Length: 290
Ligand SMILES: Nc1nc(=O)c2c([nH]1)NC[C@@H]1CN(c3ccc(C(=O)N[C@@H](CCC(=O)O)C(=O)O)cc3)C=[N+]21
Image (cartoon, rainbow, N blue to C red; front, side, top):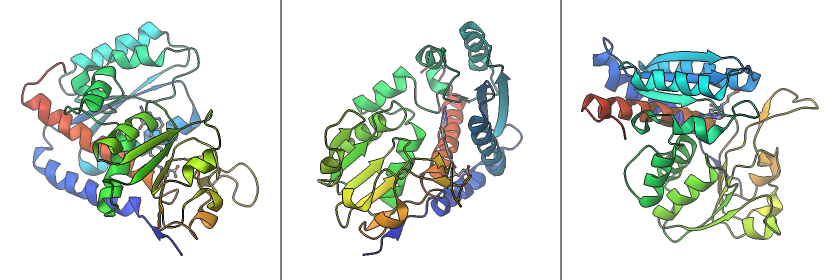
């Protein structure tokens, strides 16, 4: 078997094009997305640049706020409160990870839930678990969108999610459950991970370990979604990106596989733009504070 390669870049480009058309008549007062970057982590700076470029392409105004790595928790909170109050800011994203020692959940708790376009805050996460409308975290939403666009059957399928983060694993498990999959979540402390991943009709990997999923860990005919983004350290491909899945071996056993780059990453950004436009609509209707 040779897997069908699921084209996240293409699907994301289509979504951005739709947003651009939707926003074209409103360029006098466009949606605004504030991106807060604390410190100077080079990988974060690159991601922020991608997000700002994607905003420009569709007609979202981006507001880039940089704070030094030495900023205090209270300075971050004060900046978020200022953005909560700004009428031309509809979405607020605090780029993660924050510098070590910062209280991430406390910072996220400052974001007004109606502007929480990452969907990481407790109100939106609780709305997700409750099955209520709210902002869904962008990577899980992007994965669900790719599965649906690829006509991957979800009801009754066994989905195995490797990783239990607040940002990917937990919310994605919740979305898969809501789509009637049977869901197994495994993580670094799970015993015999291969035995679990081999049960998956849909395997989603979000652990941040380059090429850890090899062909022997995948059920033949499975759909494999690679959320990992790792920078190759050594060898001929040093400096390029690879996922958490060993692409060359897994493509021979899986039925469908997402590439890195060009898979989940661009979908994450497309979902962020969609959430920002949704936030703008909601705030235009006069909904303030979640
Ligand atoms: N508050 C917050 N929200 C986030 O959504 C968030 C975050 N913090 N911190 C970091 C992670 C990472 N992330 C990526 C999004 C897109 C690509 C992406 O588009 N990647 C391209 C390649 C990019 C390249 O070439 O470097 C691809 O996979 O094709 C990657 C990574 C969002 N994150």
